[in-house]
Image (tube, helix red, strand yellow):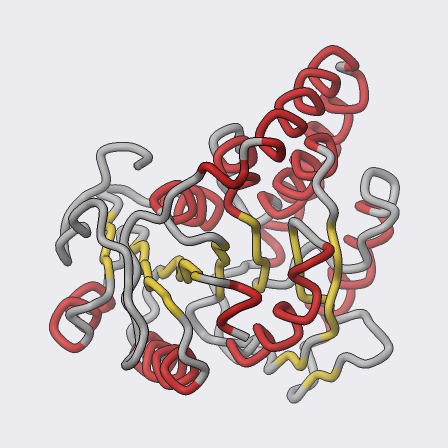
Length: 287
């Protein structure tokens, strides 16, 4: 698997994740070491009010901890982490680990013929360990019907398990405008306009009992964001053509991209072209 992915940056957005972040990081590190993956792990603390950043800084010294001084939303946290990533592939993963890192094995199988690989909870092979509350099921059924109008080839835009080839990261996350929970849709729309090949893999989903998603508060904003961004990209043919040209140029120069910092498992050598960010630092921009 390490050959297929070469190196990977794992971005974990975290907000008040003190009850889950330690177990998630332990499982992530156990997996990448077992699979001998060249890797970096980036946690973006989105101005948590609990002890999330302290847990990361004290217990996981190899993690790059980036901290927002004020809450920017999940989309903002993912954007910060992805733009700081230096691996040949970059992914984001929910802090509660509701979709397990072990699904990277399926990603590796698709890595040769895809640029963006996303987990799908709506595949026939997918499973859910815990039944979702009624209000979450209703939103989960409604949202795909809406997104199917702008992303007909994607069955599940909202699974918190998405992996991007390096050439796609800058033009997607550098242009991201949605900071809330609908950011996934915009990211996939931008990937589609870039000409990136998007593939889905079935995942097992361990539905969290606690979630930062508040359906009553966040659902209307999510729906409005999808309509706004979908309409903007569909209406602006010039913007879509520009993204397509940018994608073609980036794809052709993909081989010249160099890795930044990777942690190599025993027996493999890692590249170190730039120092990592110290735990507890505040990001000042993309790297």
